[in-house]
Image (cartoon, rainbow, N blue to C red; front, side):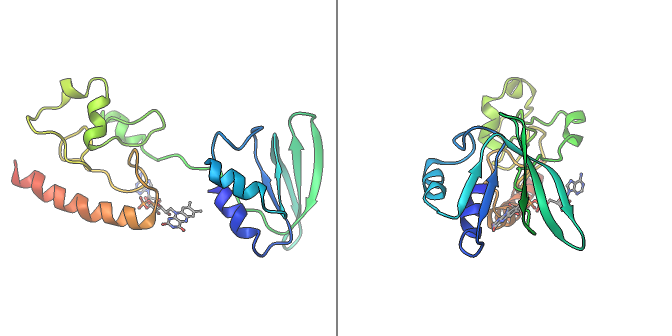
Length: 174
Ligand SMILES: Cc1cc2nc3c(=O)[nH]c(=O)nc-3n(C[C@H](O)[C@H](O)[C@H](O)COP(=O)(O)OP(=O)(O)OC[C@H]3O[C@@H](n4cnc5c(N)ncnc54)[C@H](O)[C@@H]3O)c2cc1C
């Protein structure tokens, strides 16, 4: 997301600073995007860096960036800051009902459940789970909170529609 955003902003911003905490982009960006960003003249990547302070009056004026390698602070004049730091699914409610989640908290559905320890022992049906069904029969997941989802509006909406169909299938099979 941050890589695509930086590439997009470079089309109309004088200068784009991409602030990353690690010493490389390769942990989080695909190779083609790293090459594209490295080829854009007005994008500068600040490695091992973190935003520490913002200063402004009626609007943002400057940002303090700390480099964790040499512990230096640098102020950058800017009125724009875009934060692309990923997200966490809000799925703690699923813990109590023992719905299987991946280590990052996304709800596991369909055939992805088959690889999960304990699933086969706890699944009460002869049939396999529907592809949007969680480890709890009759509970379906659609959109970003689902493990392995595409993270796009169109796919979230599509999955919502498919989930409705699968709910009907589930009810018909009771
Ligand atoms: C900055 C950014 C830019 C993006 N740009 C694009 C783009 O250009 N094109 C594209 O296709 N996709 C884009 N996406 C991805 C897209 O927004 C998501 O894939 C899509 O919104 C997923 O829809 P969703 O319904 O699964 O989740 P969300 O849209 O996140 O909706 C989940 C809703 O559930 C609510 N909620 C959470 N927990 C609870 C709870 N316990 N009880 C009740 N409600 C709860 C939340 O408040 C939220 O309203 C972007 C995402 C971000 C963050």
